[in-house]
Image (cartoon, rainbow, N blue to C red; front, side, top):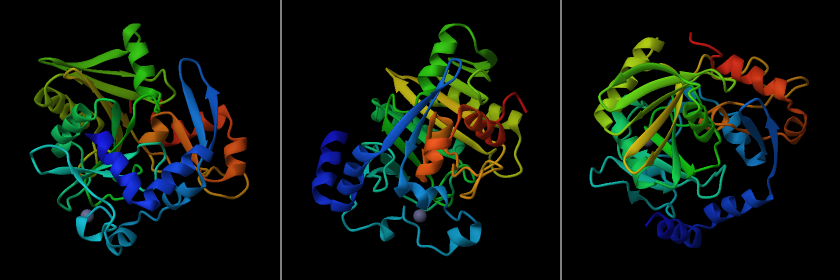
Length: 298
Ligand SMILES: [Zn+2]
């Protein structure tokens, strides 16, 4: 069903089709680390999100692009499930081919815990996709409207890299409840936690325990999250964040125009300036992770 919806939108919405077609022209390269990799993507169209003004005043003064009333006429919505809580949209500013947005039908703040069942439902419904969540202040372009994104699996390397470590017994068990287990590892350049389980209740309970461990000045700790489900078994990776942007963020000499969100902590650095794309080194990547994520438990 999602394939039919996608093809229909590509035929009916020239802007989305052009955005998707432009992805084929992008330059990419890979940086290898011990046990993981980071892929760099030169994507000049993403300057609007990489350098976005995410201050509360700027957000409050713009029409919300995820509310149905402000969407382009060509942008259609596909109900996620029978709940009526979330709907699937084609992302007109894609990072990857078949990049989807899954938006709440109500204008309600960007939080994970209240909408975890919806994220799991999306990951189950879009089984060939990685569904991800950017916390407010961690890359969410609409921190005032709850939403997820989804891209085809395999494009973000973190889930499979984590799974390889878990299969080798190289992750630490932090907590468990019923059919779910919470593990973590700092072997991938940034601290990553993973809740693996079958029921939304068990996964949700471990997520709330993880949030309590991390602590937060706001409603939820700053995080990015990526979820994949197979035959009812869901794996939710949570990457705790310590800063929105790296200390050297910017476009001048010695600066890095990288603004991490789930895509970046998931292992793909989107770089909107070509000279930065060309000069970023493995040390720069590790610096961004150290600045924006944790390298050990906080
Ligand atoms: Zn809205």
